[in-house]
Image (tube, rainbow, N blue to C red):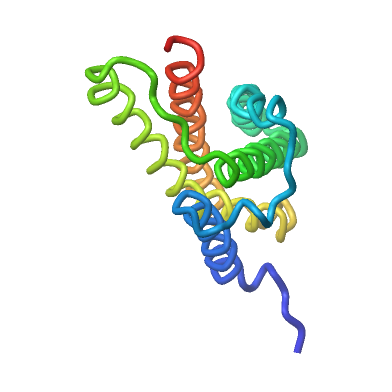
Length: 186
């Protein structure tokens, strides 16, 4: 019996989502001990938020280019941009989790009113969208890479992809806003 990824997109999406979110929540909740990750110089760990902001901003550009390319019917360039975005996200997430495991979350250094009425709502929406995006992105990615182009148009790729790209853009943008509040403004 041959198992084919294209016949199990929902199952693969579920498995990848569970593993990904388990890693994130494990790091956030401190369930992953710092002793299992290699040490790095403090300057490297301190640079991670800045590198991640650059990765996030670049991902915004690649998503927008991907949308532009598919609207023009250029499937190959669209695919290249979406896979590039996924690579940027994976790099972002690996660095974010690495730093989180080593030093924990960043404390907001600004005024309490900004913290309560701007920072926390922005962070909450960013986190919620990031969580929602995980299964959507896996789903459209798996649909896109397991089918020939001619079959993708008959799948949910376009419909779900529009939602995934929109939410991903907002999440990346809000992540940049959080970065600016943590590391630039305050």
